[in-house]
Image (cartoon, rainbow, N blue to C red; front, top):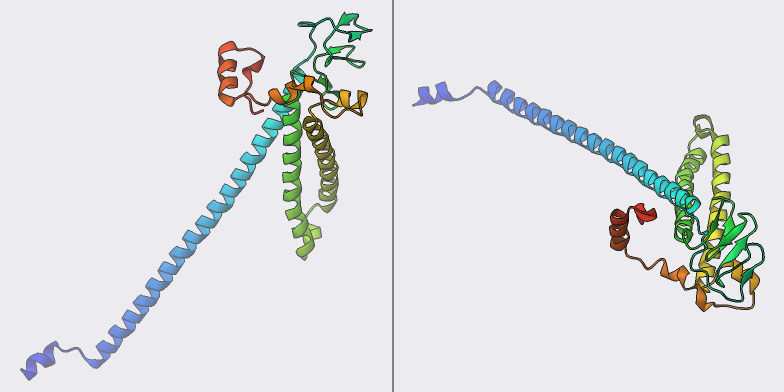
Length: 252
């Protein structure tokens, strides 16, 4: 029995070597798993960073699309019409026609504009009944886009100030120029939006606010609020069926 146990028992050196091998094996496995986790973390970080860039690009692409589309529709849709003119005391001395009380003559366009709000030099067109909604969309998307650009450039300014070699790695002159230009554009757009909100709150138009400064509300300007009450489904359904001027989507 002593001989059998002596044959099958491992020597002391082999036991120590086995323990050392086990320790080395555990360390190698730990290193391997740590490496795998680091690779997974780095891959996840790269995917997260790239997805962030992709989503950021998609966000700005949609903003540019909506901005340009609303600008195009505001510029393209005309409110010039001589239909449904009713004989009232509001007679246009230039066009020599009887018109509705909310229709005004534009000196720049040289014609009467139905439900005229004002003549906008940015779109080169009068803002009236047919393009008022697109003009509001154009202003809103301009504010959103400029605010997004300011937030994005703020990150660059933070890098410029905190990083030691920020002035060497960032085109600071271009950055400051774009930032100042964007700030001016943002304040211009937000002032236009505030003015339009004030006009909507008084249920009026800019022309009537200038013509009748003492009056606060005008019951005959209900079109300003009614044109925003159309449903998305109705506009899309009509646009695909009629293939008319409302072929474009509601947004904007």
